[in-house]
Picture 1: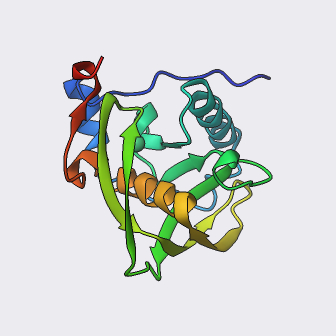
Picture 2 (picture 1 turned 90 degrees about the vertical axis):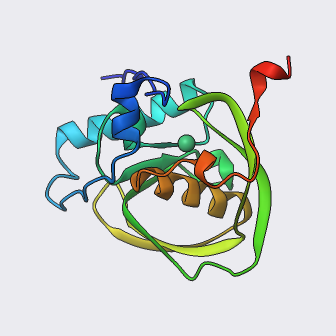
Length: 168
Ligand code: ZN
């Protein structure tokens, strides 16, 4: 069965904003292999690529659970990265500022300072624990997505905000 893409929830919608601003719930080990959860993973990956995003967190499709996906193109990964219950440690004190955007806040951009490297521990789509060291853009996307799972958005961290509609 081909996965369908889902609408991406937007901050400007009050009901959707409430979910985007909610701290999400951990996913149980038992829930990960279920057909419903596997279908949700496939739908999130399809939605991310269709929206031309490089990452997507579950609250962005209205699910308040600790799940995010990251496009494989971010760092030459073999397949999209699936993050259940991610935990980030060993964040480098060295930070780099780069302009970010978000599928839930269209046409808004702003520079965000984030750690250049970190250690990610999470569960994959088979509910297996993995740990990776991430650097540069992958480390940035991981921090952006984990923020989503904590109800935080990049505009909370951006030093300035550009409304793209004013540019064009
Ligand atoms: Zn986002």
